Image: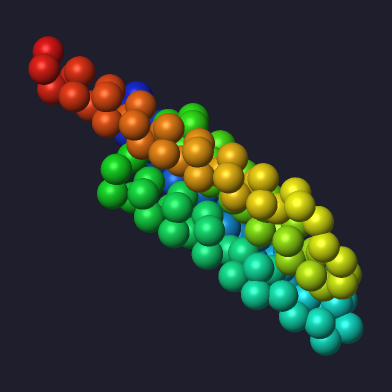
Amino acid sequence: MRLLSDIKTSRTLKTWLAVTLFCLLFSLVYEYFSFGVISWYMCLLSLIPLLLGVIPSLFFGDMGRLWNDGVLCLIAGSALQGILEIYGTDSPYPVWFLIAGLLLLFTGLAVGRKKASVSLSN
């Protein structure tokens, strides 16, 4: 019988793989219909969930809710910046997505480190 943490890690890994595939398909379709306009934020969109979602899930298991929300915030900000660049306009909102995403990532790391140190001391 598998432990609950193994099941949760497996579910998290499958979810991040699905998010990576969705981002890849979304960016490919959006770039196809963009009439030759290219945005690097859109082209590299699928690397965010791959590098910050799939790989940490493989090595460390579930990273926690704050980490996952930070990754999703970075994905949304990158997609928004790519859409705005392809459309040919500018907005201050992608910067706020970046700031919020990084704050959530660092908070998630701090909370995860604190949980790990508490569990090791017991």
